[in-house]
Length: 151
Image 1 (tube, one colour):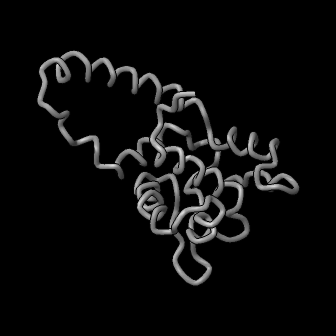
Image 2 (cartoon, helix red, strand yellow; image 1 turned 60 degrees about the vertical axis):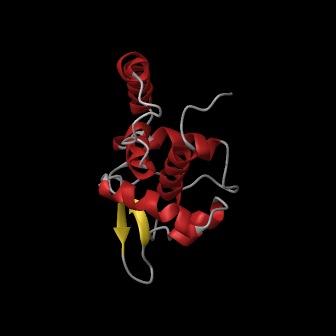
């Protein structure tokens, strides 16, 4: 299957779902998140910070600090996570090489519309739905995680 999302975007969605499932009673430490997904913690930090800036996650300082959702699961969708992750890559601002009128005036606008349509589809996918699927498949083993709390 061809993947349209960058590895960073997939990781960002997985991180938010993981946090949604594990942030009760205390926030999820970046170290724990990294170990569950076999990543070096520094690899995750920039993505997590972008998600905080986007208002998806809340950073909690202190010895028991970490990350938790900034809003209820049903009010966070996959597209906003992808958009936040895309701000980290830095690739959006690079001009295509070589400079090409065909790319600039024909190909890029078409791909841009397709990308936007793809993101609109992801807007319908909530973290609540992804958590439910993760629980059904018991991706973290054991019993399903606790239900979402309401703010």
